[in-house]
Image (cartoon, rainbow, N blue to C red; front, side, top):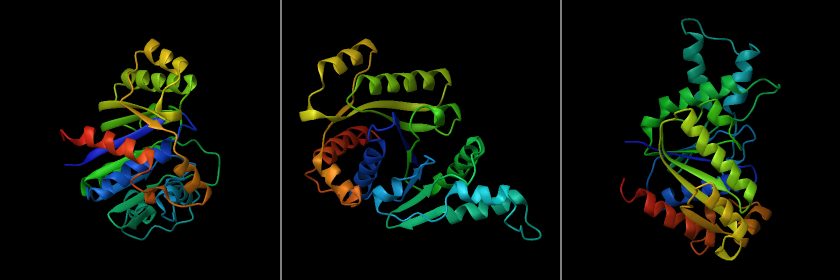
Length: 254
């Protein structure tokens, strides 16, 4: 049975970094195969995983929309599109990566989101875990890219604005009646592991109880600066330790 994990939150909250650490945990535990999905048009999950991205869903759809692809005789457009979308899958050990990306124009992302969701639904049965790094904000929810999720990780940075963003995401999940089985709140980039009283007060006001507090981690900064994949972070990384503890807790009853 496939377990789906989605990560959402405010831009700049470290969402992609934490998505990478979730995938790192699954790889280390041998909980494979994994489908990693970069659902952000500004795709950078591949860099964080150390995987070079070639074609993206957005570019393939762009080719179709501009009629650059000649469909073979005897094949419908829909079937050929499914065939071409497989070119967007990048394979690695225990892990496949699918990136949404974006086309060349300024088109609405509703259609790419729809096709991405349909394609994920088709693929998911082949994997033990599907981990989705969503775009910042709440657009993915209104487009319903994120649905039928076992674990929704709502990431806030250490700020009042970040907390308010995840409160709005929480409320939109309820309003849209999305099939999200469980939600967990992660407060990221916390100095010395202690939440500021103002941020704490906002959490209380909005009735949000953090499931995990992820401390500021200079190793993440150093790896980013050196363009080293975060999936290679050592076990003594404070952020790695926090995510490993979270995942142990979330999966113990699975």
